[in-house]
Image 1 (cartoon, rainbow, N blue to C red):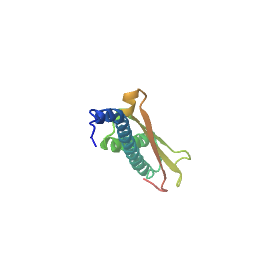
Image 2: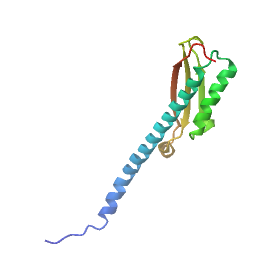
Image 3: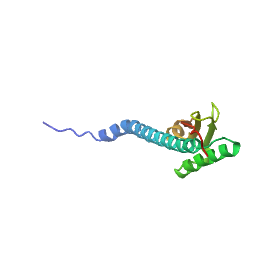
Image 4: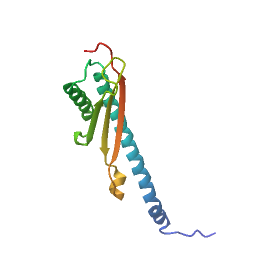
Length: 136
């Protein structure tokens, strides 16, 4: 039996399969980055809510300190301050056992969006904690 040589067959197959493999790889990287950002936001909002639940009142300066503390935690973990939005609210007031809510969102430009054009993805996380009675 004669063996036929198929010159260029491997290169042609690689040219067909490589774009699909690159898209899958970039999609996995984007998914991993988005999940990492979400975990960072969840940890930062938890830190802000933990600090806020120890306060006995929520004045504007206290609200600013909660935002600053949350922002400092998020920036220390590598997020850009310009892309962050942080909100602090107490829907039921500052009574004991009422929740304090800290919400942060981050604008993440994905690699796949650079290829196909599109807006950055907005990732957000929120934490609520019960206000401790008799806080400082």
